[in-house]
Image 1: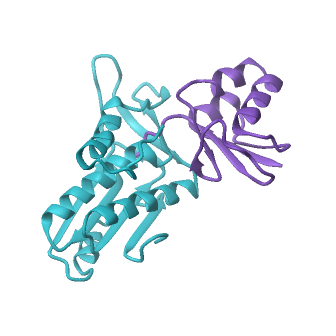
Image 2: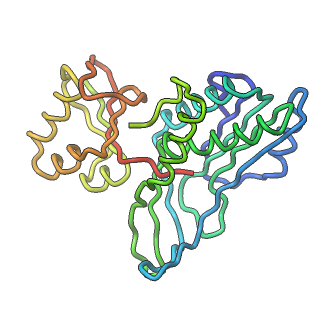
Length: 171
Length: 81
């Protein structure tokens, strides 16, 4: 766990699964907490007419920069919303359909801060934290996942909404 | 020396994840040296406008200056979460 900028932030990049219930309980015990909001991302099967279904993902990351960039994202969230604690867990290595990939959880006194900060952290993580997904389909064919324009748009929205200079967009 | 790190599709396309190079004046100089000395596959991978460059684990610009001991990473747009 690293709390680079704020002692109530905890970040883990790990191969093993996590226990959402335990994480939520811990967040709920942080300070004068009246609200806990969280997001869990899982591996989708993603079968379409054009592509065979996904059976597995391999998550690669940039050790060091990953943790640092998540810490910076949490720090930005903490500057804009009143938070009691924040927790980010991101798994790496080989994951299968239905497996949990990512956990983002925050606690605050009131729900508005918790909802907004949780969504902000997730939007920024998707466009700024150096992780890359490679997927295997049912035919055994592997390919790198392309970045999605919708993720970029989701992250850019916070800049418009808050007109905050420090919500810098990833190049 | 400069430590160069490559990730994901770029690492796979070029068959190497990390290398050491003599120090260059700027990120652009380092990139151009790699492209010139190592051939068209490197140029294709590193000159793509989508490539993100980080110096010492912070996103950097081509004109940023380099010093001895810096770590420079080239990687494609991120796809985590």
